[in-house]
Length: 618
Image (cartoon, rainbow, N blue to C red; front, side, top):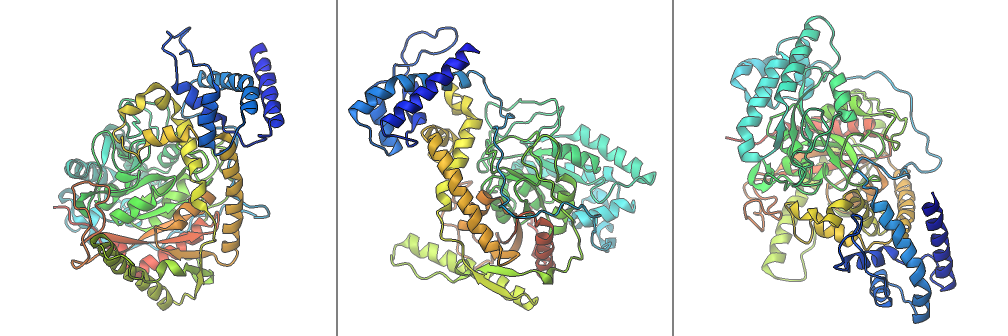
């Protein structure tokens, strides 16, 4: 207690010194502390703590350069005592060894002032029973392609009417996971014993007339950042291969309650970055020389390969959107604060979102209906309702599109081979977006041209990196970051180190800028209910920062005449696109409008039927 009081007084004195020195709120102490910590003396550790070098004026000079400020010699002298005291508080916090599950005391809320949320939950309204006669004509044992690639809605009808048992489906998908994992590397851990027990229980309940709903008996896979009691949760990262938790994530509990059958913990990029994990690089089923992209790599790959009924992924900045695009599947990135993240690895407390990756939009809606809503633990989750209605009149929605994003690209000024190839790829891919707009008009949609706000959304992204560096501080301080597979400039170890030099002041300023970004996006969505956009571009950063929902749908497959990838190196991050690979389209919605957004996306999907295409694996 005395030490805490003393530290508080030292901190106030330090702030007073800074104010007298004319620095106000612009100083970057984090950078200074990091420099000092990295200048550790070789003195032996005392009481388990490494002795830190004394802070010097030269260190302040170096930190000031990083901070982008100037400090006079007199100001540096005044600052020394306060900086030493502030560093002691930093070291004390580090000594707490905060686990990843501990969230900050602040809560990010994307809802602008005056917005009223729909909190009245309505009964689930699913589509009419589909014709499923042809799906089982060959028998489950033979693993017919039609059944393996059936939608959740189709599988639900088969299970409900007891034409196919949950046990049979579970065995089929387990067999496919085992068959194709050596090629695609999408499984970290099979939950086979758990799955067979749950599938048998589902069959008994359904036979007794206790049908829980459309997910009852449906096998699914979860990104391996979701805790599952009795199984390892590796986060895809070296050094965490045998990590376990003695509880289930909230979304796992909720899917268990819905009767769904977890059959695998699927691969993810190390600590939710990319498709490279400690075992391998997860592959794109459409082109096995390509990675599946994004950190929900295994979820998208397994769904695309017909190896699970559906999957859960997460997105912080593209990790549902990107692999859904690469693998030609449907993803729903929900509004921030719709799905509780309790029991899931934290990367960014103000940006992480859990959402479904499926073969069809209605599948995503059915899964979302089961997993959303407050759980009493994740304080970001709002009391908003997700009311899925398959018969919602989507024609009542106002629909905009990002005009410049669909404009045909102009020829580059340069004439290098690389520029020519990039232009050829962009021209080829642009026709899919143009065709999508034409199809929407044919559906009777009046498209309103719009543009993204002129706002530096990308300048706020370091907030993510700072939060991620805090979430995994121990890796940086202990040197365990060297155990991660990726060690290049863009990989987490380097990004975590860089983030150590991002000041608390700059973080707060970025969050204030984020408030302005939310206001800009609120103006945009005041004009429309849905925005149609390519899946890449500045909207991806903007909407992840402001928490808006997105539905990503397949929008065709590139033909044999498509320009080849610039890099055909096996598994190279830049090996993407080319003949026989999918393209996608994204629909954005207003905050917490996820259900009606999905209804609109489903209407487009049902019209185009691109989601019925799937890769040939053998």
